Length: 229
Ligand code: AMP
Image (cartoon, rainbow, N blue to C red; front, side, top):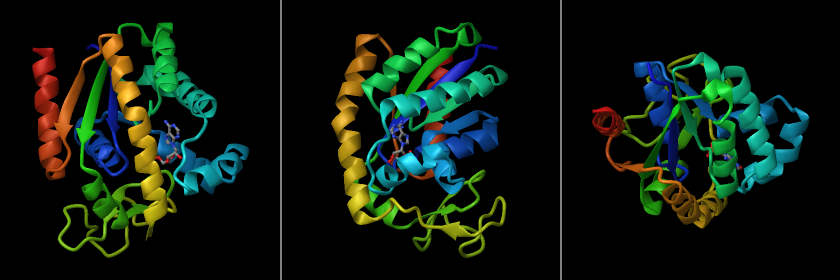
């Protein structure tokens, strides 16, 4: 079976994490969320955690060199164990995209197919979603939920994770000011990132992220099927 690396591009709140988690449950695809990695460092109060805490809370990006070394470490330890890997939230800059291309030249990743997927959601919907988002406080779980009444992402029991029964919490960067900063950061880098992938002839699969998660998932699977045909 050909190994694949799926890269989920899209603004904060576009549903990259929820889609990754659904792909993991349905398809068993391994997921690396760089945001989750960063939050783990902060909760565990590591040296890296102390360095990135302020930037993360205020919605700024972590330095390219630090995030690239975190991803490189993760890939070295986990990359060759899985047939399909999803990168959720990496790369976010051209520097990161170029570093990833270099990493994928290593023998462990020989023949791995890169598939880029961009999930498109308007900034207005992002604001609505993120102001109602909760996540599982267990840093090994971090499943995403919504407190909006009637949302498909509502937990079965109020403020309790369906998967591991830990309490749900609000993310520190899901406040109006940090959301604006994160959207600004996203838009600042998005065009350059797309231009970079165009320049190296990597096609981007475009997905509408404003529909229910099941429909986003179905669209992804359909488009991946078309690619393999
Ligand atoms: P996320 O969970 O993907 O929304 O990421 C939350 C935060 O983690 C971001 O606002 C950044 O502070 C940091 N972060 C995650 N991935 C990256 C990345 N690829 N480059 C820089 N910072 C990142």
